Amino acid sequence: MSPMLFGAALVILNLVASARTQKTEPLSGSGDQPLFRGADRYDFAIMISPGGIECFWQFAHQTGYFYFSYEVQRTLGMSHDRHVAATTYTPQGFLIDTSQNVRGQINFYTQETGFYQLCLSNQQNHFGSVQVYLNFGVFYEGPEMNHKENERKQLNDTLDAIEESTRKVQINIFHMWRYYNFARMRKMADFFLLQSNYNYVNWWSTAQSLIIVLSGILQLYFLKRLFNAPATTETKKPRC
Image (cartoon, rainbow, N blue to C red; front, side, top):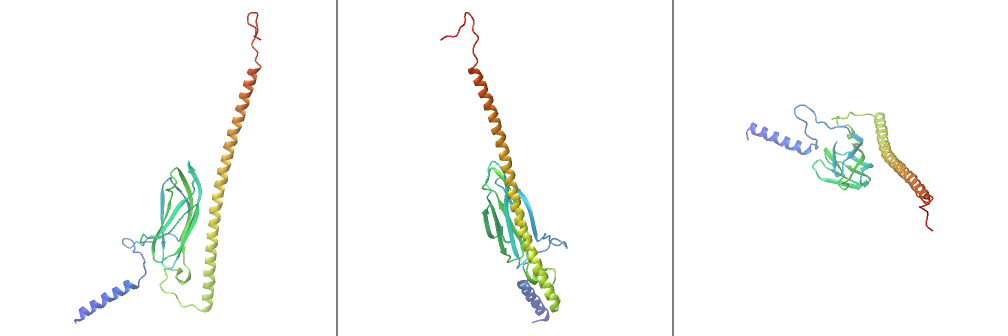
């Protein structure tokens, strides 16, 4: 075998081996522009129209923990059905899990790197819009928390202990932030419920007050007619 053919065979074997061992990282954008991956977590509210579907994409690396929680805060329109359907999909488009309720959570460990799809459907409610509060993202535990570092330096015992303590504090703060967001979701849902009940009571009180005043006016009118005696003259006298 000539040296040129032997070198070409080695290059092909190296390419195949590297392709088998590399992680499922997405390809970069066109040119030298890096791929936009967004933040690791989001929380916001969105209005979904009657029979509508809203989808979002969240980037996640392998060995990450993906969390997705939602809660319907209020409804607008003729229908007051607060149930929505939430679904999550892998970067390849396969269904991971689904949830159909007023509030719910979908949590899972990411098995591949890419953009995970989250969808909310209001197709069961064709006569009313819903406002949904979302809280989703991904976090990482262990040494793979920082994905931009290719090599980690050798640390001594003191720095390792400090790093481990800092990592535990960050994870605890993250979980506290998640519980805080759950409290925010419930607080806003309770606020809109109280506001709806307040408006309902005010409208019904006003309507009942008008009905009472109108019925009083009608009773006074008919009672006045009962005691309204016709005038008598010589030619026109009341009959016995």
